[in-house]
Image (tube, rainbow, N blue to C red):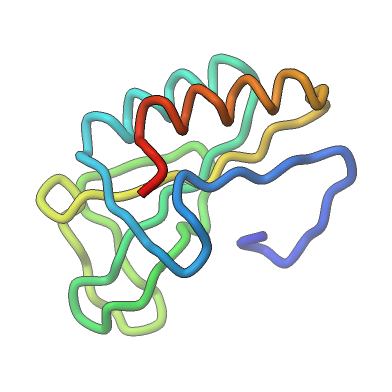
Length: 112
């Protein structure tokens, strides 16, 4: 978790396999973020720093901006150009709803 917490009854989903970072177009990330927020989930923007190439997770939930600053190296990356991803915290979800979500994600993005 971005702040080191491990809340109970929360499932964290990433739209990428571990170790295989993928950035999506800004408008897709913003649209997905709005959808998840309206469903009551908490979202964190992820991006690859344009300077140090580290995969970064925002410190603020439910906030997206075209320019995201990497606090460790100080660089600001234009994610409208570079793209980004989402880390979604889904609270109190049944296994069936999680399976349906994952099936939609795989269908939409493929299994690359």
